[in-house]
Structures are given as C-alpha cells and as structure tokens.
Length: 125
Image (cartoon, rainbow, N blue to C red; front, side, top):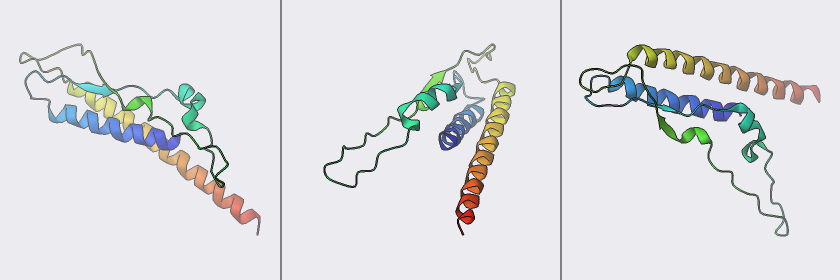
C-alpha cells in the first residue's frame, strides 16, 4: 500500500507541475488526480497476497487492475483569469506541499518496514 501511495504521489506531482507550467496558457483547465482512498485500497484484491504457481496443477494467479488513482479528473476552480485560464497558483502550491508530505510519510513507512525485516532476519542468528 505504501508503494501505491508513492506511485500516486509521484503521478499527482506530475499533474500539478503541468498545471503550474501552463499557468499562463489561455483556456487551460487545471487537473488533479482522484484522491487515494486507503480504506477501499486495503479491502481491494490488489492488496491481498498473491498466489505463486509452483506446479502446473495449481490455479493461475489473477493480475490486479491498476489503482483507481490513475484516472485524472477535472477540478472546478473558484476563479479564472480573463483569458479563461483556471490555474490558481496558490491552490497548486498548496496541493504540491500536501503531496510532498504524503510522499515523505510513505517513504518513512517503507523505511520502517525494511527495518522490521532486517531485525527479524538478524534475530534468527
């Protein structure tokens, strides 16, 4: 799940940076990703442990679908410029900061998980 959150954060960072890059483009509409819902993600088939097929008589494992965060949705801004551009830089910078914080949290979770694995492997010595 932390890996999926890292992927979502990286994709959102890309979309938000495209919005900022097009802040002066006439009639440009800002975009954003759908929010990542961890409750649905935890209950989804993608978060379950996958089967490994070691024998031809075993069932074939299913391939999970990509996460729902990959779909880009249009947002509805509160203001737009005279040329029709709907990018509000303050909103985009705030969203970038939020995404950075989520990315850093996910990185810390991955680090903690790896440290737990290291401790568990050393305990058996």
